[in-house]
Length: 314
Image 1 (cartoon, helix red, strand yellow):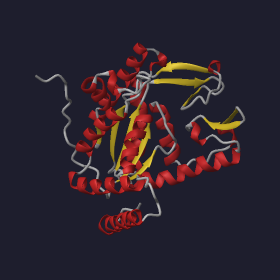
Image 2 (cartoon, one colour):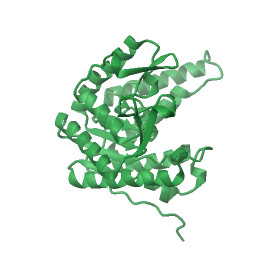
Image 3 (tube, helix red, strand yellow):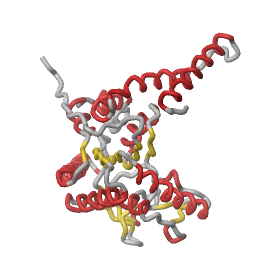
Image 4 (cartoon, helix red, strand yellow):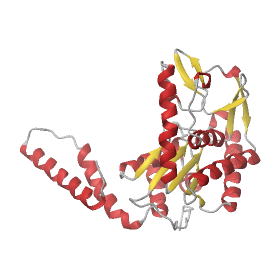
């Protein structure tokens, strides 16, 4: 008897290889997949604006990037002795306004070049719940712990999400007509809003994504949300907060992802890289021993061989 509902996913045609260039946007789940791709030394730019949860946040990021926007003082807000950008994650927040303007503006110029040459863009949507800053009437990507009374909470409709995704696709393809765009919905449960509200949010995201990819070429969907909800379907695959997938779940979804989106001819290279990475992380009992020195020599030979064969640097 089969006690699981394993999801069958069709293999992609335009798979990732070590010549591919990848850019990711979105929620913390795309961070997990991005970390895996980075570990295996694929060419990837991960979340240039930091973690973004909703489609309008990603739309704003893509627009600013392709327009090479240079920010000004009025684009930022001061709170708790630091300057913040409502378009960026708090990792960009800075005590110096000039440094924040410089850092965020430079990201736009650098990322535009990456998007022009990207083979794949991965976008993970986390929620359709958004916050509108009452002083400007604009939706924000991050509230930066500013008092909640200064925001209005809203749920994006399916049509609003479709409009946002259409703008994202248009701008990406206008810069790079051949790029493949892969959407996912994050399996992370946003239950601060409530369990019913979380499912309403996910439903709106799913409905909008599938309508959009049916109407656009080179746009695809990877079912990370469905794998977590229907295939794994058990709290033992969550972290202690019962909200985020644990390492075992991430590994399982990664396995599905690589079988779908990574060229199988690269698996042997990935195995070599994994061996080298584990060697780098190895902590010797005696760093000065002859045995450890020989181990490091062998590790360096592996690195050199991989660089000669694939141009991969460590």
